[in-house]
Image (cartoon, rainbow over all chains, first blue to last red; front, side, top):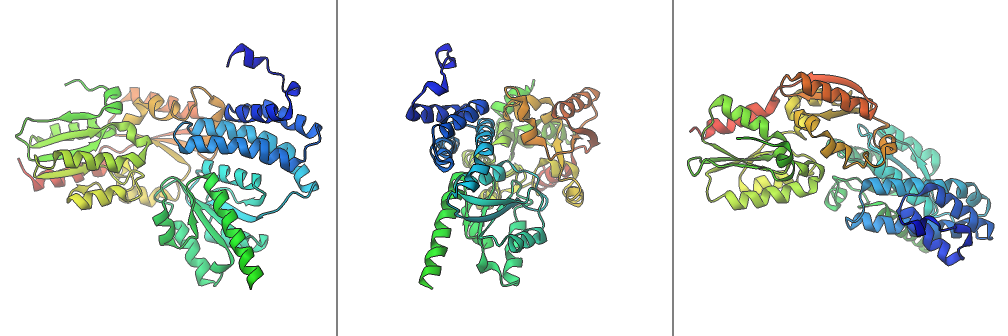
Length: 234
Length: 218
């Protein structure tokens, strides 16, 4: 970063410049700057939801696109996510108070035997950013853990993640159990993880395989809209 | 022949006996030394070797296409091609490639499993989900395969993001080498993990290669 850029004083930027700068700061994983930018926008009277969508989610979408296109790699995405998390921590309590739109509720976790949660954490964060309520079960989840949480939380969506080819078949165990209990139709089931693909998602009976966090958000929105339309029609 | 780990990582290896061999092993550069050791010990002079760059280990989506390209390039010249990879994160794609071209491959999910023995590894798997494995090659190339690709050279604070749920590093030793043991222990310390050394030898790699070598005796 040049000296000139070091001298940028966020509070002196107009809104448009500040949002643009926050996109750059997210890209560079600058957590403190993101937190400062969020506070400045809130201080200028922006609604928390507007800060979230225009400054954070839009910035993280750029990061996600560049990751998908091979321009950014996992370490940079993690730094950006940490920066976004800093901003989200400020916004989250305010979002609840100000009645930001709620899209639906998702229960998410990595499957039994799998402790790799980087992708799952990114999906959780981006889903929250898109207005979904996320119940994160963490790592190494059994069928029972998923099913209990889905029922207790009255969730709309089940998200399952796996990094290992040895653990990804467990997703089918969960879906088969939902089928056996006659509950498969109650939930939208999204699956993801590096070794998965669309074919695998179809074969195990998931509603969709999601290649990355951005796709997970768009897919979840699409399925939720379809569910609402069906309810309205029914 | 002098083998450099850096070459094995970035370029792979071609060992061509100049037309005499009818059997080709296409393998991962990360196990080239082990294949060569078994070849020398067992006198498999009828076996040629073509190893793909070991760094494909970090990009499993590229393994199946790279193996398929190599099979196509070499298939006219050899009667038998054996693929010295396990599934290695290809999600079954490598098995599809091998089936399409009539080539056998090593059974199992990855080298950690076949070095230890697939059966034994599977038995232990449920108790070892928080173990991070390194082989001889990966200990030697720890920086190239783990530290730098994960960005830990630039952002050591990311260790928690990657390794928070890991408890120990298991060094699967193919040979007895105190220097490698010490380096593996140092790797564990850098990652903040407990350390365990486990001698595996060549595991199922040995029986898989012996099986194909005996099918095509020299």
